[in-house]
Length: 398
Image 1 (cartoon, helix red, strand yellow):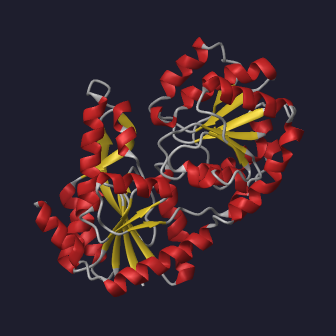
Image 2 (cartoon, helix red, strand yellow):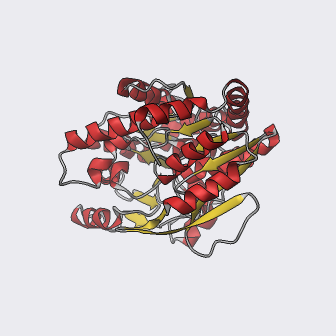
Image 3 (cartoon, one colour):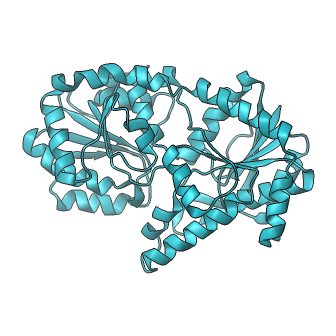
């Protein structure tokens, strides 16, 4: 079976969508599914078999992303899909409409993964627009797009419930991205601490992710102030880059945390990131907009206990209480828990002990098996007419 994945983002742009695409691309081959990609070109990336790059231009105000041209994207998707059995759209921008049009032309089923909760996302980037109006527009936009598809994949139960509330009627399937256990279990913590000048005995809390406003990293900085009342030498390491970097560095200075926060940028996923997980004592996370929260599982796979808010997509991971603890949604309360953890890590050792076993239940192999079954069911039972009918009825013309 051959599947075409279409996306407006992919490596070297580091985010959860890129990670999900690459994880499934790597593991689906063992399930008899060949994955072909159509994705943006960011610079001088080397050509790779099965990856078709479409030239794009920088997005104004966002040096990380690329905006591909509609004509070029559609031509690439249509050409790449001609000998495929199904189209899997990964982002709701140009890729969505190019994938739908190709599916309609070739009579192929079209499925999409809903990775981003735009309802809670847009207000951070359009602050002059009323938040309630933005939320309403985001809901309507998501409903229209999802109802054009033969099926929608969501990474968590909470995301399915949210789309149900929007009025999405297309079949929905909860299927999270899995994690490569061996990759994250092999980190070298001492090497990382030596590289970044972190004393071997200093307690380290770690955040990994895009440094963006919707990740609620400012909450972690406020929590760190409280944690340092209990364990004064606590260090927060922030691994990632993004548009909130300047604001967060300013907040760090304003809170008197310049010697307590280390911004280290993006890390290579093959060695540096596993080393970073291995160097930390606890993983901290406060995002309220995640559709899954893959980094929580990466941390657990590395044997790292997690302290995180249980919100939206992270609830599926955190609700069993295995390998993780969820404080109240209050920075002081969160900081109290973090400080006690770093001062008395032995009292929390059971979380570290159970984390890898729990993460193994979310392995990349298990999730690839489920996705391969879904692909085959869709290819066997549907012929892409759902997308065509929905596009026609909604008045979408491309």
